[in-house]
Structures are given as C-alpha cells and as structure tokens.
Amino acid sequence: MRRLLRHPVRLVPLGFLVTILVGTGLLMLPWATSEHRHTPFLTALFTATSAVSVTGMAVVDTPNYWNEFGLVMITVLTQVGGLGIVTGATLVILVVARRLGLRSRLLVQAETAEFGIGDVRRLLLRIAGLALACEAVITAILTARLWISYDYPFDRALWGSVFHAVQAFNNGGFALYTDSLVAFSTDAWVTLPLAFGTIIGGIGFPALFEAVREWRQPTRWAVATKLTVWGSLTLLVVGFAGLLVIEWANPRTLGIYAWSEKLLVAFAQNSYIRTGGFNVVDMDGLEEESYPLVIALMFIGGGSASTAGGIKVATFFLLAFVIRAELRGEPDVTVGHRRVATASQRQAITVALLSVALVVGGTVLLVFLTEGVPGYAALFEVTSAFTTTGLSVGIAASLPQNGQLALIILMFVGRIGPLTLGSAIALNTRRRLYRYAEEQPIVG
Image (cartoon, rainbow, N blue to C red):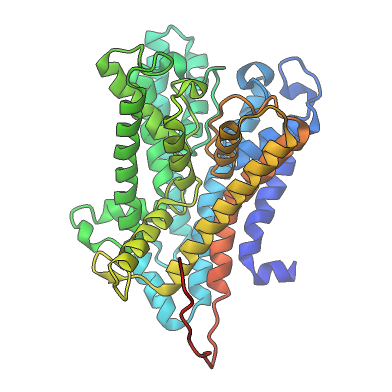
C-alpha cells in the first residue's frame, strides 16, 4: 500500500478493477435479471467491464435480460466509470505537475490554467456539476418527448430518459431498446440531445473549461485545447460528410429516408461513432467503404481527460503536425505559434504505436480463437472494445468464452491504458548527465 501511495497513478487501474469486480458480483445476483436467475460469471464480468469502461458493448439483450435492479446497476457503474476516469485523469495531471521540476511545472500550469494546480476540490465540484447539469437537461428534454409524443407513462419516460442521458454524457452506449436508437432515428428531439451530450462528454473537461472561458479569444487557448476543439470539429465534419456520401443510396441505412432525414441520421450516427456507442442505423448494413472510416474514427476517439476512449484527438492531430514538420524539413513542431516539446511528441508516437499493436494483435487473436468470423468484423469489434466505443456488427454475443474474455481485457486496457501509460512516461522522465555520440540511421 505504501508503494501504491508513492505512485498514485497506479491507484487508477486498481480502483477500476475493484469497481468492475464489485459490479460483477452485483450483476450475478438472481434479482438482477428479468427471470431471477443467476447470471454466468463471464456474462456479468463482460457487462460490468463494459459499463465501468463506458463501452456499452453487450453479450446479452440488455433491455430484456436485465430487470430494473440490473439496469440501475449498469447506470451506476457507467456514471462511476465515466466520472471516475475523468477525475482520475485530472488528479493524475495534478500529480504529474507536482512531480516535475520547477520549469516543467510552470509550463504545465500555463497549459492547464483552468486546473489551478492547487484547488482540487473546486475543480472536482465543477466537473461533477457540469456532468449532472448536462444529464439533467438531456433528461428533461427526453422525458417531455417520450411522455407527450410517445404516450409513455411519466415514470417510464423519466427512467428511460435518465438511463440514456447517463449513457450519452459518459459515452456509454447501453440502450433500453434491442435495436439501440434505430426506432428514433428520425426524431430530432431524441437523437440530437443525446448526440450533443456525447460530444460534450467526449471533448474533455480541461479543453471544455478553457474553451468556454476564453471563447472570445481562441488564439489564447493552450495547444492541447486547440488540438482537441478544432480537431473534434474537423472529425465531426469529415465523418458526417463521409457517411452521407457513402451511405446516401444504401437501402439498409440512409437510402430509405428523405434528404432532410438523411442529414439528421448521418449527423446523429457520426456523433455516436467516436465512442458514443449508440446507433441509429444497422452497423451490419453499412457499405464496405464505410468500415475504414468508422474504424478510423473509433480509433481516434475523443479528448483527453474525457469520458471518451481512443488514442485521443490531441494525440492524432499532434502526430499530423509532426509529420507536417518532418515533410517540410522544419527543425521544430509548432502548433499555433507554440513549439511542441520533444517529450510530448515521443509520448504521442508511443501511445499511437502501442494502440495500433494492441488492435492488430487483438484482431489476429480474435480471428485465431473463433471460426468463421470475417477479418473486418473482428477488426471492428476489437477496435470498438479497445476504444470503448461499444458499436458492434453483431458478433460479440456469439463469440466463444475466450473471445469474449479477449474483448474484456481490451475494454479494460483501452479505458485505463493510455492514461496510465502517458502518466508513467511523464513521471519516469529523468535527466542524464551525459549524451552518447549521435548517428542518423537510414529510415525508409
């Protein structure tokens, strides 16, 4: 325990693991299922891991398998997982800042001015307040819509709205309908609040707070905020346009709708792709050309210190600036008239390459463990699990036990891996009193 306290970063995966095991035990209870039967350990473990890691992937029919107690447990686990990773990431940033040297601490403080580097209580209260306020607004809108337009009893409308609001803001993806949100695909009063909740929760609190505070002067934003906000907007536009063009005439997705409905459905689905987990079209019905786009968007994910997964938007676009500087022969990588530290570049490359290795390795393992699973389907499921997206082409429930166990490990690693790895790298930085002679090996 003393070793853990000396290295608080290690408490993050331990806390998530304990929460998953507690959730697994609760979901195994007979009064958590609709038929009051004991849930198999692997099914409960998969569901608890999916909820705590805010993935939303399921191996059972969520609305029919679990009863009210089970669904409440999933909601609580999702909320704890979403806010837990955000507050954990925030506290880790503070720990990293305190462990760095004076010069590095001042640089970190300049980049994370909204944190205050000392007022942890105020910061955590702001995070919790924003989360609850956003979920409350979504709940109010959905409750009114389901109660008035769909003739739901008020208590059922309220419960369904709370459940989906928590899932949206935390980028969870569980739904109270077997086909997710397909039945509401053309209802803007349902899909858009959930889409905006997913976007806000996936931006990340450091970037969101600074963007709101300095909204009149975006040129003063920190590099991380610029990469996250402008990068997220870019990905939203690219994903929306890509889905619209590719799926426009597909009768299994957008082809059955009028042009105005196509715009709504494409925007909503694109908003859920980068770790939101809901779907308003059948993922198994997408055109083949859409899968590379969807997999790439899932892999990138959302913002740092957010409820979203993936390698993070800032990581992806920082690598783009690294490539740009290398192609132009520039000695420094600059973003918005700021030079990016070499250590940050190495960290981005490390996180991205290790993530690629995990996705490729997981895909090969899943194909090896299962028979008859197409390669693209295995890649889709593995990417969705690792990036905690939760979208599926329908093979997760039919996988053998070892295949489901592989997805469980990927969900857990994908949720805490980038945070733990990045923090460990930052805390492990040390200075040598000497440097070796330099060589330039041939590359390419």
